[in-house]
Length: 222
Image (tube, rainbow, N blue to C red; front, side, top):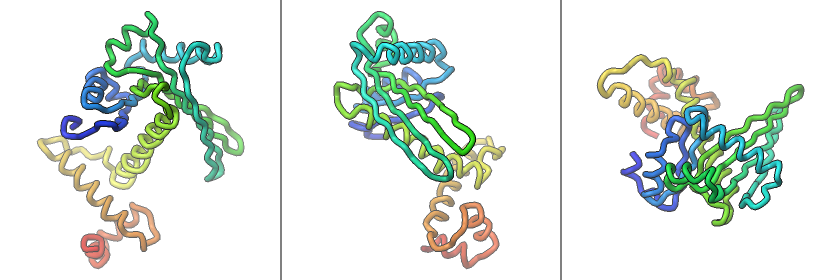
């Protein structure tokens, strides 16, 4: 899919499943910048990033190039405070092999989210391999935007397809069936979202379209 896209000057994000050396290399070779979620499927590198970030923080990032930005959102009876930090990887022996193996790797990104409700506080920290360099400027803002937009796609599209269309429960596996049904679901979702007059959720609008031919026709023709 990447080969079909012009990603020059763009930031390409991917979850841990696609945090692969070949992916990083292809994005870099096509002129893009990557932000890849780092998790347990690369356990050694993940632990190395954790230790590196912890020791850097304890030493107040001495002799390291770093940039950070903070955000705070309030609503739905909770407060979410987020910290996005980018740390350029130094030219040391400890990171030499990783920078050589991951073409275009320049920094570690750290996203820390603290969520406060009336009776509970929780903190989640995520680590990323990135092709963003602090030396290029606006690194933390660029990283924060990439991270938030990636999760926005997850929440706005994938979650809706699962909850409102039961996508994860679909047992179709043969030939082009999965791809065809995935395309039809997205088409249906886009048509439903175009209806801004009906005050109802996606699932309710789906049911209404199945019960009411006039409403179905309005979705298809408007």
